[in-house]
Image (tube, rainbow, N blue to C red; front, side, top):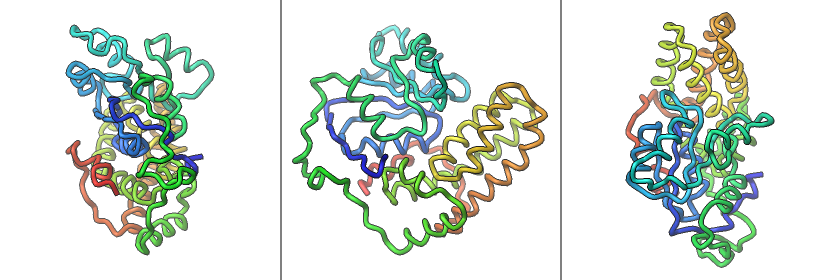
Length: 303
């Protein structure tokens, strides 16, 4: 339960790499770890991840399995085979929505050290990092840390009227706010950032989904609808997330008939969710941006 999640360790000398094609997933992980003081590098595809792994030594790498183009398994192989061997032995944790029986064994057989299910929850992430970070870099006695309160309860962000009214409006529209807040560390500020990112991604993502659908490129369609499924769950748009899951499974099986039947419905739900977010938060139809420096604005601002 992330309502009670509170960082129980710091690791200011540790450095990790997070590779995930979905910026919302990166935002959540970075902000879950903000108070641990871990140095975090991020990449949004396999090639970026390999480049960073060739330049820096990491203590842990969190690597998304399902990405467009090069997937996590192929990315891992390239990282392990880098000529400079910088991260040949670095623990690599697979990030996946695949929580079925035998998943852990399969990912370990592919070279991963362990796996975390997405959307990532704070306590699970913490346990995994404490397990794999070098013991000498982990400081577990943080009860007297000045950034925390009395060590028993997380600090709650201040709520202003616009934040409360926006979230209340989404709750009335059917968003599962309780579930969303668990993934967002019970932080209204982070939730608002994630909602805004979700809405702003629509133009790019929606256009790509339509293109893949028109081209009957079910592989890339499945990868992108998988990302929509994960992001929708994080923001509490459960109907969209569930339909995206069905489309993902259909595209995996090559069930073109189901995709063709439900694609239009899914796109309408996707548009509706984004419109509800824009109305509730009073934001315009801002286009998505590829400026990676902006995705961690929340973390940098310390809000």
